[in-house]
Structures are given as C-alpha cells and as structure tokens.
Length: 93
Image (cartoon, rainbow, N blue to C red; front, side):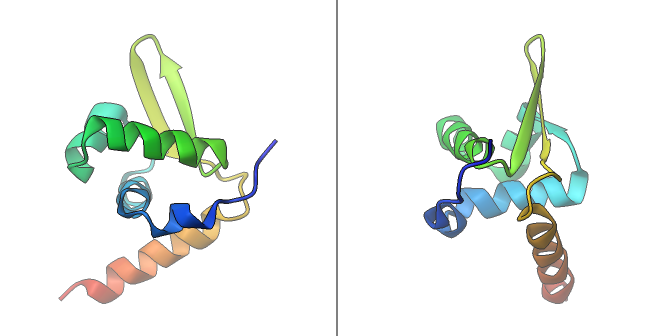
C-alpha cells in the first residue's frame, strides 16, 4: 500500500538528483546512481528509502546488486517524469 507523499521530500536536492538520473537512464544500479548524483552513500540510501516508502521508486535486489527504477504504478511518477523532461529541455543552452 502506498503512503501519502511527505511534501518535504520534494524539497530535498537528493530527490531531484535521483529522479533526474532515473528519467534519463531508466533503471540503474546503486553504484551508477552514486556516481551520477555525486551524493554521499548514507544520504542516497536514506533518500531512496523515503522514495521507496512513498512508492516513487522500486528497488530490485539480485544478490548484492541493487537495481533502482521509477514506479510507474504511482500516480505522481508520470508528473515527475514530465516535469524533469521539460526542465531538462528548457535548461539546455
């Protein structure tokens, strides 16, 4: 069951960095996400846990490998996807 979104999550820079990478690449492993976002592991882990708790991302574990992707069953995900795509296009010079 999905919980209500904690709106403070949307104000966290880690949230937007993760969403941007997932919009650009689809599903990625944890190491790639760490490299691309340049976040500290503990910050990334906490942010991913919060995002997974509210149903924005899914995490698939295969042994020691973690694959992270957007959860398209969440009503907020398509809106976040569109927002990041539009912002990405508008900010390119």
